[in-house]
Structures are given as C-alpha cells and as structure tokens.
Length: 130
Image (cartoon, rainbow, N blue to C red; front, side):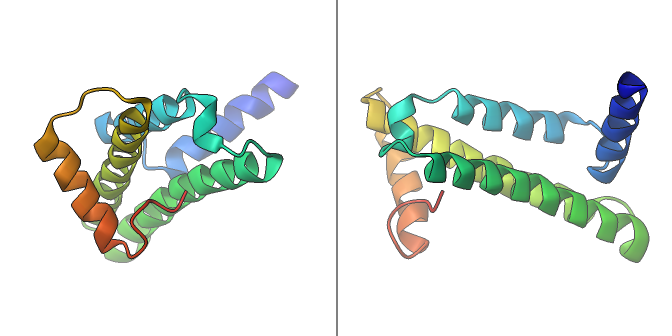
C-alpha cells in the first residue's frame, strides 16, 4: 500500500542522511525558519526563484547524505565528514536567517552584523547566492 511504501522511503532517506540527530534537526529547523521568511525575500516573486530555492535546499541534504556515505563506506571511522558538512550548512542557514532579519529591519547586534557581512564579502559578491 501507499503508506508502507512511504514509510520505507522515509526509512531509506533517514539512513542516507545518517540518522536523525541534534545536528540534522538543527539544520532542518534553520531551513524551516528560512522557509517561513517573508515572501519578499523571493522578490521578484517567480516560479524560477522558488524552484531554485527548493533545488538549493534539496542539494544541501543531498550533500549531507553524500558526506554520510563517504564516512560510512569509505572512511569507516565515525561521522567526521558528515559532522563538518552539517556544521557548515547550519552556519550557512544561520547567515541567511540573519540577513533576512536585517532586511526586515529587526535590531541585530552590530558585531554580529559585521561578522556576517565579513563572511558575505569574502564570498566574492557581497551577498549569499541563494
């Protein structure tokens, strides 16, 4: 039936991502927070920008799964690459949420804003590529 097939798919997905732990939950929470950002973040509002955003998030989780696969089958000693990838993408999502908050005009500590802008300037274009 459809319910058992859905359950099998979710089980395989969780296995591919390395199981549900606090780091993966944190990444899911940050992605959800970004998803709940105001609609003008996608301005100009278009199907292309939404599809690009979904593809971006799908690729993040795909890369987490690839890092887990490398850890599990090639390195075979812990979850170091998966953990590094999760921390990187949690930081990336945090920067996006802070940038969106700044666009809304919410007060953010100046040191934090300077830190985020320093990271964004090092990326080459002064803004995140979402």
